[in-house]
Image (cartoon, rainbow, N blue to C red; front, side, top):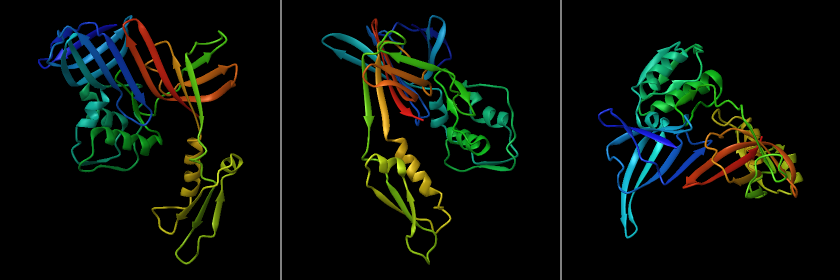
Length: 309
């Protein structure tokens, strides 16, 4: 691993080799986080940004949030806690304004580019209408709202500082196997959560009627779930379509898997996964929703949390 930093005076500094690195990524968390531990108390205290490379491949580009010096009987250690560049967009409040027919480049240049972020492509689609930035909204929220309204997707600013305004592309497939036909793993945990399943939603469409509309969840009922929810769809804020969303959300939390492998895979969020196991068989349709990748000395470990799609 090679690590360089930028100090408060914008100078580039070669940083010492960390004793350990832990990178965490999560589907519903915009900024990835990283924790690095250094020995000897020689880490510069005025570092504000850093980039991490492995064999000339960029692994992580981020900001230093906390620098701690720990002194114990075993010696001095420096712990650096940081986030990906998305942390800058989360920390900065956007100035309230209104745009008429803004294009991608306007939103990107105003709310992301100034922080060293790179756009993943050259597209420049126009938002057809009025786009308002309200008081108290973070710059990341502006970019997120723009992309959701225009593309119907949640943008992702990845760990290398690249913004994917149409969502993180799934162009990677990981195969884990215990028969030598894929990446070996140390541990696999499969979870089927029946308690979160909703078997039926009973709704009313207006104030004048009772709760007489029933939406049954065949998937949940086949799993033995007996859990009813009531939906008041008599106002515009809660349309009747929310019944389907309740059932879909309950079903999405039913199946999960956690797999632990003896390697460092920090850029696998959103990747498709196939698991081959002698006991469980071949399991497909899995997607990575959470990553914890770590290196301590020469020991590498990655824990992936998976869901079915």
